[in-house]
Length: 397
Image: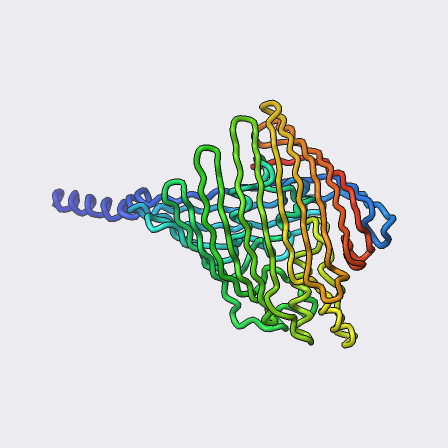
């Protein structure tokens, strides 16, 4: 009897320990991370009239304020399950940026590469920020980022992305489903640049010995059926304290806007990609209004092509102090009347001082100037030049 009891207890202990042994062999980790960045920014020629100045606190000067969760599970045999959830917010007022999760994807990684499904960065943004970023200590400056205005919203929903690396070469392919999207789904004003649009694209990059170079392409179909093509190429060089980078990007609308609601939504989406002070944008054309059918003719004045050249230098002056200078030149064309054909020049200088690996302060000065047709302006107030000053503090955890 005693022998039977001992055997029974041994079997029970083994059964109870089996899930524990499985869990130990397939470990999982959950990481909470984030950035809190708040800055003061002053600009001239911004507001309801071109002679107005604006001083404000912003919830992201050098970086977007955000928090996120990374999950990694070891599945054994060299395979891992991956999850990323990332919420962006404006730290000056605590407001969450819509959509709530700027990234929300799940994936598998193994000897075959990595497959990710969900809302995530597109291949244009991936290539620029990892291969020829504007600053070595921050891929771009959140308060002033002309280069990101060429990445067609930076993210896409409903995306499947495949990425693989062989030595110093990395490649990726993406496809996002429009999910039978309609004009009504996008909203009458068309201000949902990252929503249910169809995209297909990929990139190829090389990085070794301080040298990185690559090219990317993305084709996009907007809700009304308008097709865009975008591509970018460039490279960077890092040696000791010196960092150099240069690049080129192009966005091209391949067909005319459809007159009516579909045209309004698509022109609104492209305007959202190309306009906005945070991405150094300027007007692509005169707006049309759903309440004024005659204004549909304004869609013909929209530009259909934008190009941008970028070159920059960074230098680590001391272990704590970094300085950077970047210049961008853009050209816009395709406006039927010529009113929105022209050029834009952007210049930004930034200094960053690190108190620690997690906390730094920064200051930057930027200047934008547009020229060309009568409609070329930074925004609806008609200003053709603008200077900004930004200073802030950032903490990463």
